[in-house]
Length: 147
Image (cartoon, rainbow, N blue to C red; front, side, top):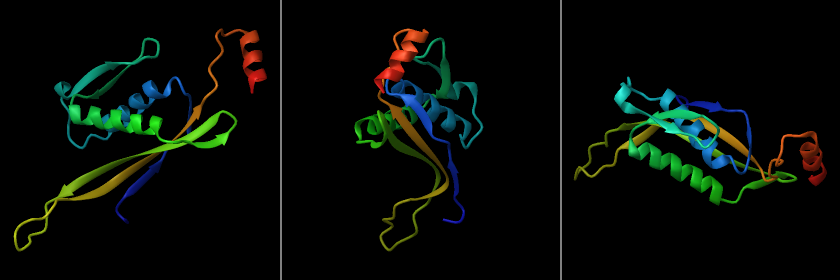
């Protein structure tokens, strides 16, 4: 489509343990920044993150949260493509669209048409190797030895 703007983001490599907490943060941030209308403080809520002392803003609407949660769940339960030792790749696409009213028909039974004007592509690389238990040089050596 000529009027659609595609935005490919660079690949994001994450340990498997962080994917369920980092992806919602990233998706909600993109959606919040691309909200098509002027937002008021009542439209936004702060969400705590599993990561240390982090939180992020998201839209208060339950439909948006449910859609993000479903997208993350689908990515985590779908078979990922192996791209290296202990690495797998998956992708998500976020579409921003407007709904055009249905064309008039004989019985008036038309469905609204979604016209996508912007599409964000996210490639996620999941690292299945657990992080070292300690942040010491010995832990790093052990991590490299496991690969």
